[in-house]
Length: 244
Ligand code: ZN
Image (cartoon, rainbow, N blue to C red; front, side, top):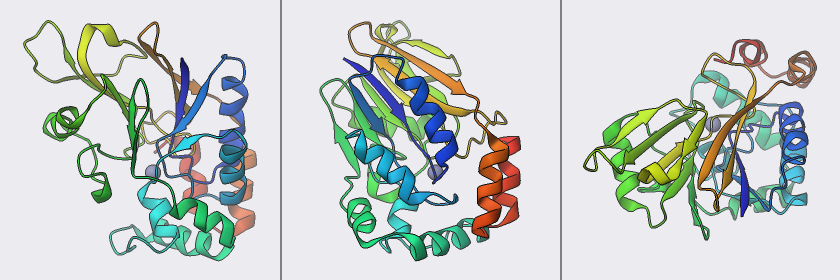
């Protein structure tokens, strides 16, 4: 099976369209999303529709939960909070029910998927250290799990040769057979935070046991204009150019 895995779209339709165009050339069997379909950007409905059309397997992110009133926004920064309030005002009832029904984690044939951590996914904790990763790695039932949430692509894994110690790397091609367990953060489509403004996604080939982390250029001018037209905070449009 070939899986395309993407996440943290954050209502950025221009970036999502560009990524889907790439994915369409890759003979993919299943489209998977690690969550945060909405929040920040101006096109929540369009992004939800694109995933639904393609029957994507989607898990719930913290922004998705906040935008349907399931999570308090008190820990969100000021701009994120404003974007959640804006998003709440434009989501249809049907879009809200779809977001609300998303699972917190999913186990597929070849991999597992969660937004922040496979361990207690309802807490939306960030996986930013080896000890964070260990909690998810211990919870895994399949050899690979995909997450997002930090908006930074990275692999945390246990190489088969080092006695089970968890390590991390920023390789763009990951040979899963070299590790007993791997936790792969696929980065963000709509709000990258690793100083690379290009949209991120991953391709997972379960037969070849490889994951490729990809980056795709998209029309940031167009998307930034859409942010401004929607009246979203200017800083959210500006950061698209910087990938921060
Ligand atoms: Zn996010």
